[in-house]
Image 1 (cartoon, helix red, strand yellow):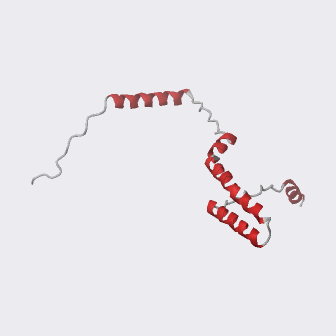
Image 2: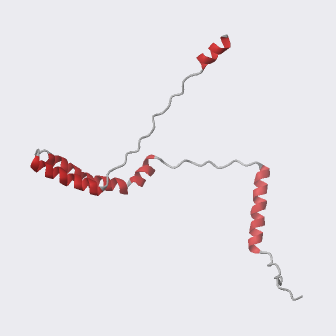
Image 3: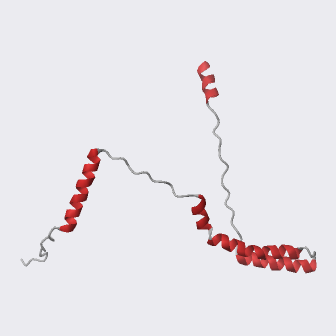
Length: 123
């Protein structure tokens, strides 16, 4: 009975990280048409819609620059992982050198091609 209580106390809840939300940006045509519609609404409803339309249209160059330079930003903020060289034992190093020498020898002196066999023999 005591063992069960101890197991329950030792188990700690695992903290789950919140899932990353991917936001899909609107296309440039949608932003442009939205800006024009906001300007049109300013003539009908409220003149403050002019500012909303202007902001939507001014957002287009910002998003285009973001799309163009996104790879550079990723490289700047997330450097590539460092790869450490593998430490080999003496036997592994010898085997590797022997395999390299055999490959170099095959490149220098390739084996002769196999003799052609006549498949269609007359009987």
